[in-house]
Image (cartoon, rainbow, N blue to C red; front, side):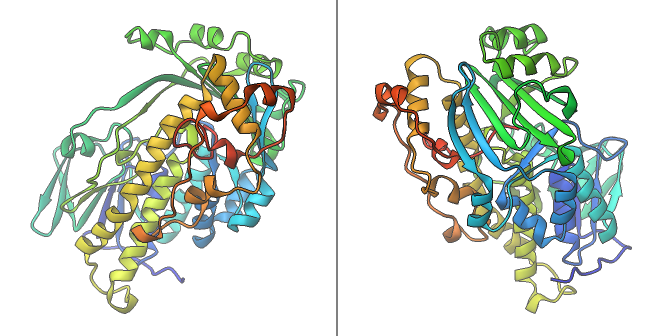
Length: 451
C-alpha cells in the first residue's frame, strides 16, 4: 500500500491523547490512510522510559507492513532461543528455537529498547505529516453532535470527528467513561540495561531470551542494541504490599526476594537500578471501549500484567486494526472520502475486546504459574519439560496474524492441570521442551516472557 499524504491544515480528523508507543503507532497507521492526525502529549518532550521490550511475530508482521521492520532490526536484536529455567537450581525447563518460530509465523521474534521502538514511530509520524504537540494535559472529554471535544488544563478546547484516548494505565478518559480502579498484583519490577561487558562473566546467554522462574519471583535477561547492551528485569512479590503499606517494592525487598536463587540470578541482582521501580498493575477487562466518538486504545483500554510481553504489541495492533477498518469502510478505498466512524469503531471494538481480554486474563494466570512454590513448583516444572515440541496450539492464538473480524480469532488452547504431572518421573528424566508448551499449565496460559 502506498501511504496517502494527509492534509496539513484545518481541523484534524483525529485527535490522539497520549504520545507513547500506542498513540504514535496509531497516529502513523491513520496518517497512512490520508487522515489529518494530531497527537497531544503531556510531557514536554516525546520519549519513553524503561529498558527492553519483546516484540513477537504478531507485531513484527505489522512493522513489516509499515516498512519499519528493517529499522527495528538494526536497532534491536533477533535472539536465537527463548529459554525458561528454574530460578532456584538453574535447570532448564523449556527451550524454544526462535528461528523455527519465525519459519512458522513468517516474521521474527525480536527484542528492542523501548525508547528505540518509540523513536522509530516518532520518526515515522514526522515523515507522515502527523501534528505532534507536547506539553498538553487533557483533563476532560465529551461528545459533540459531530465528534468529540477535549478540554486541556489551560482551559482551551479542541474538537475532531474522533478522539482516541491512548493515555495509559491511569487514563483520564478511562476514569471518566468507565470509573474503575487499577488492580495491584502486589508484584514489583526492577530493570537495568548495562553494557554487555559488565555481565559476560555472570553466566549469561547472550543470544537467548532467558527467564528464571522462582517462588514469588522471576528474572529475565536478554541482549539489546545489536548485542552491545544487556537487559535485566527482576520481578517479585512485595511483603509490604501484602501488608497494605504504601511504600512497597523497595530495594531491601528486592534483595530479600532473590536470596537463595541460582548463581546467575544472584550476580544480576546487584546491577539493577535502585532509584526507580515499577509496581505491577493492571485493570479488569471491560467490554465497552467506544463511547460515542471517544475511544479507548492501548493501556487505557486493556493494561496487562507483563507476563506475556504483549502490552505494547496490543496497542500497536489496536491502531493497525482501526486503520484497516477505516480503509475498508471508505468508498472503494478512496482516501478522500468520508470515514464512517461509527461503523469503523464498532468493527474495532467487536474484534479487539475479546482478544485483549484473553491476553489480560492469561497474563494473570501465567504470573501465578511462574511463581509457584513447593510441590506445585515441581508439578509445573514436570509439565514444562514434557510438552511436545511440535505443538503450536499454545502460541497460534497470539503470534498468528492479527484478526480483523471476530470469526478470524483463533481458538484458545486446552490447559494442562498441574495435578496431571508425574513429578517423580520428571525429576529422574529431564527432557527438552519448548515455550509453546510452557504456555500450558494450571490455568489458561500462553507464551511470552515478562519484559
